Length: 71
Image (cartoon, rainbow, N blue to C red; front, side):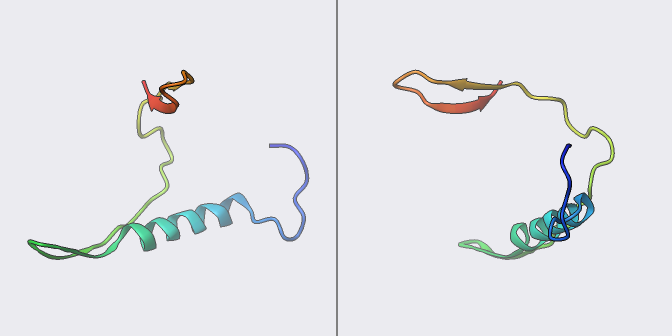
């Protein structure tokens, strides 16, 4: 990255912590279905190594089809 951060700019570590806290808060919780109620606990961790293969993103721009897909 280039450029200088000012005092109000969060660090990468701050942003990482916020992202992990957000995943834990919004992806977990109480799930209610017709078959029952479930408590979902999510404990996200930051991957330090490549955890998944790279994907190629293809965007179809035709008039009848306009969305991105993982190829």
